[in-house]
Structure formats: C-alpha cells, structure tokens
Length: 421
Image (cartoon, rainbow, N blue to C red; front, side, top):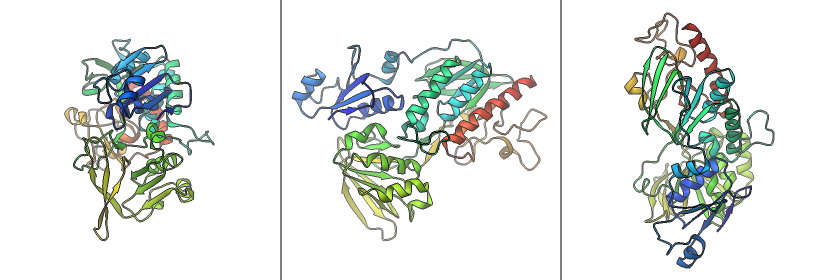
C-alpha cells in the first residue's frame, strides 16, 4: 500500500503494518516536509522483493531507501537526521540568545533574534514546527486565505532562520540548566553545553495520554497522538476513531475523511461547538462519513501486536461497548515538558506551565528572591533573562498566530534585558 507525499519522494519507508518505528519515521518526515513514500508489506514474499529482507518479521525492518540509493535498515531518527545533513554541532562557544523548542514561538524568536543581530541558537529535540507541523492545514493564520500545511509553514520559517544564520540543533534535548547573571548554561542529553546570555523556553506541550492499560505498548501500532497526517493515506477503507473535540481533533477528522471509510470523533462534552472553531464544526457536519459520539470516552485498548479494538463508555449510563479498529488518534490537550524548571527554581503553575510577568506578582510585591529593582518583563520568568513563549507559558492563547507573536515579543524583552547590563 504505497503512500505518496506531494512531491517526488526523497525516501522510501518499507515495513509491515503496525510498526511503531516506521510510524515514528513517517511522522518525522511528514513534519519535516521531506517527500517520502510509505510501502507496507503483508507477506514474506513482498518483504523479500520490496525490502530485501528474509521475512515480514525480519529485525532489519523498517528499511529506508534514499533517492541516492543509500539503504538504511532499522534506522534511528538520529541516523536519518545525519543522512539529511541536519544534525549539526554548535558553531559558537557562547551565544546572546538560546531558544529551546522549534515550534512557531521558537522559530519566530529565532528569526527575529538573529535578524536583529543576536547570536542565536535554536535547540529542538524532535523536528522543526512542533505540534503545528503535524497539522494538515492551518486555515485561520493571517495572510493564507487558502490555508497552509503546518509542515510547509514550519519549513518556510526554518529557511528564514537559516537565512539569518541561526544555529539550528535538531535531535537534541535539554535536560538541565544553570543560570547566573547574564550567563546561562543549558546541558543537552548528549553532553553538549549551550552557553548564552539569555534564554527563551518555547518547548510547547506534548499530547496528553489516556493512561490506559496497553497504551504504551500499542503506541505507534494503532494508538497515535495528534493529527496523524502521515498516517491518513494508510487508513483507506478503515474505521478511524479520534478522541478529543478541540481544533486539532477537528482538523484530523476532516483530513482523514477523504481516505477512511468512516471517521468517529469521541468527545466527553455535549457538542463540538463548545470546543471547536465554527468553520470546522460546519465541515464535520457536512461530511457524510464523520460522526460524533458525545458524552463518551475511550476506556479500553485491546490488541497484541497492534490495536484491534477499543472500549467506549457512555458517561451518562455507564454502558460500555467494543468497537473494532486499528486506528485511534488521541487529541485531548497537552502537558508542558518543564520538569527541568523545578531544579533551577523557575516558577510553574499547578499544571506545570511557566509563570511569567504580571502573573508572578503578588499584588505589588515582586516574586520571592527576585534580584532586580524592576518588575519582571511580561514574558520573563522569575529568573532574570529567562523568558517563556507559546504554549508552555501560563495563560497563553493556544493558537499558532499567538505563539508567533509571543516569540517576537520575547525577543524585544531580550533586547531590553541585554541593554541593562
């Protein structure tokens, strides 16, 4: 079952259905706007003919074949990054600005910071674009009346950042930090140190889990998080379930609709209009193969090697029933990845979001241990020179345009902070 990306494929990904690693590779390539073709094999004969391996359970699967003929067996994402020429080391020993997270907020901050002359490094543990890159089409972003794919928007922003000579470090994850006046040190998982005078945390959120038995084991093998743009062509003739009623869930439903036989949205509330933009509500109502189960939740996941069934519970009656499916996409909100903040004393709210600016103030009193005479700037945390932007920030507006705006605004406050020293 081939899946053709819009352009001539740069990579062919060959594997059997239900492979979590193959899903991760497809998702990475889709988010990175890399043209690829997904080929699924169902028999040993197909495995030998198409992938060059002995059988369908061969440990060398998935196989990736690049346009130049390079063949990779069971590759890591790091190996793919290196093959694409995207895995780089820092070019400087110190920077003016270090940005962690390359979603819309981080990309915006990188473009504005570097274009303003700041020596800027952008660190991302996964790929450019964040959750926005997994969105099939952003239709309410100013200046794109026909909409734009999240991956394409992210790729354009990456090109802008490179134009202004931002150091982009992909496949790197920050694990801890130390902050001193006008000099912070970020430690990456591979041992790399990033020294910078200021920092912006724009790490966004990860999709919330259902926390059900078998969920971890079936991740990438029928259970997916987010809109699943890379998987849509593989759902032809299938029944797809989407847990969640926000915009990301609505966009996923409309994206799957042309491929899947049937798409079912499972929401805890009374209607989509409570949580979904009206243009998406209208499209879902107009789609003949999308239905919505209200006041319902997913309470069970079943399957050995891949998802076979889910259990649904009606919240009013408590009645449960099982539905056969190989496809469940979970879009039920996010959790910020800010555990690092506890160690360095950066204040978080009860949900783990970073608290900034006026929200740090206790009436007219500055936050405890605040060392400066002035109040924290609007996007500044309780550590001077450390800012937060986008979804990771307490009380942020969860929209792509808002994240872009906050990234630019954070750079303006970075300039103010640097001018003080």
